[in-house]
Length: 342
Image (cartoon, rainbow, N blue to C red):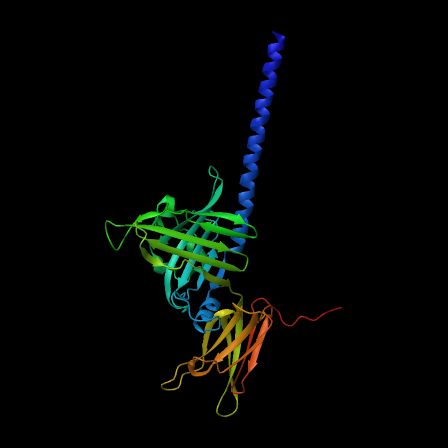
């Protein structure tokens, strides 16, 4: 009898150890996902623009224009303060045709960990009162009281994007063939939605599209190619404009970034367009030319730059002197020229 009792205790101990190991393994997986979600939350916020991609598709540098060229879709992603919707909530504001005064899409993206399936998931929603939140990334406190009641769910649970870490980047995908929705334009028809994102520390590559159930294309990028959006660095510029009497008019506090945003200045002459400045990080798609950081001046809105200069892509200041105007731009938060104290 004592022998059986001892054996029973052995089995109990083994079962307990196995259960403990299982729980520890489960906890380790969740902890790993939590660390990954923290990294996504660190990388994801920012201003993104695919101007570099669009520019080289259109200027012929890399060869003939592709059959399905990309549109320019800048976007701003903001990590919202923790509130009723959770800790990992982001506001996305996208712009049409590269114009930062033309908001065409606003989304709330909620990230969470699915403990049962052991992955990170993202659910996206529209805003019921979208107009109220235009440019609210500048005042994130506007979202403090936002709840699920203020959101519009377009997609079912099956359309959640699943994120995973792949090497030194994150990839998010809607599982193929799982996101089936009703067409809003064609009642009675269904649409299969696909979407994929690749997030790195300095870029966001994105693709989305829709087809009919028979596979016929409806919207998106026909060739399935990604939008290559680079994360912008914010700059503040000043411009001196030469006046007829030889003096200079100073224009300061001009906010921009280094991914192709236009900054208009001066008054337009009758029948002319306004002049503008553009900063651009240029990454050449072919050849062995190194990346450069450039400043362009387009007088009277001319398509071809009136003047430009360039420096290293890591530079925190850039300037130009064209006699009729001078301009200088400095990375936000940078105090000035660093001096080697050694």
